Length: 394
Image (cartoon, rainbow, N blue to C red; front, side, top):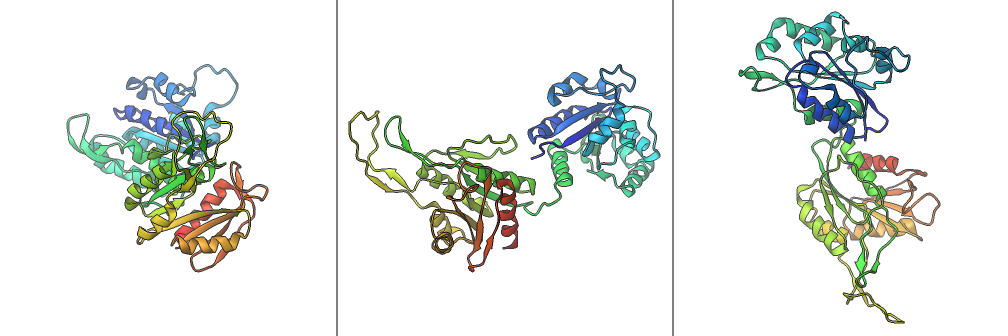
């Protein structure tokens, strides 16, 4: 999600330093590169080695430490950063930033930055509510600094009140909001099916298809980027699932996928059927490996998952896929009506650069009113956002 994004995390001296470790971990799971700058006071709470282990990058503390390569470090870090997060941000650091003081590596680097800067204050309640601190925060907001407010709770000093640093999960959510401003799926839960199912023939063989799960996975990634929550019902796939996709239901057969979808759809706002479940299963599968010279298989129909969801979806939006080799639009428009879907994403799998197990696709999206929108070849990640755009218009 944040691949090739560089983030600088500034850690100043406060007990909330330990929470900054989780921020690094979560950002790394999203694929971001994280450079940590610590104040000397921060190193009294957490050792730099901890952040180096989590970020897989050296931690910067001392402006005058010997350098292995010649570069002006605070300038180079400022230039490479696409976002700076200061968490925890003490009253001292906030005051220095408001006055333009640059007397350590953190404040010096921030002064050289042109990227957005997100500040997560953490301090005693009286310090936070002090008019000087509030004036400094107001001044920084005028200059475009972004704040995520502290929360109420029991503080390290024993007091109870406002001043606790926001939770790491909320800080990272704010990071995503800043870096990926389109959040039209925020508050929505989307069920997505991906990959192929496989139907056993005997103890070692099965029937399946060429689906890799790439399209479904790209849709899941796009939903999360745009603020949504994902339930991923995953069959057989050949793609790596990012760590930030955590609600995964693994299935093997079409029957299992059907049961998983019917159990999960009620809590969702949108159902996107991007998987390629097998239409047929073996009527009488064999438990052991078949060694006959000839074999005749009797196949029976599997449940039609999309059709069953269409019967009970209510106000939920249903998006289905239609992979065809002939009569693309005719079959797609028939399918959207028979399944009671809201959108159908149709593609001719015989076209070069479309279909299964490739990174691109060529799709036509049809509405239940019969409108069609044809697109040239795009990356599946781009197709995913086009599909979400169309869902947002419904």
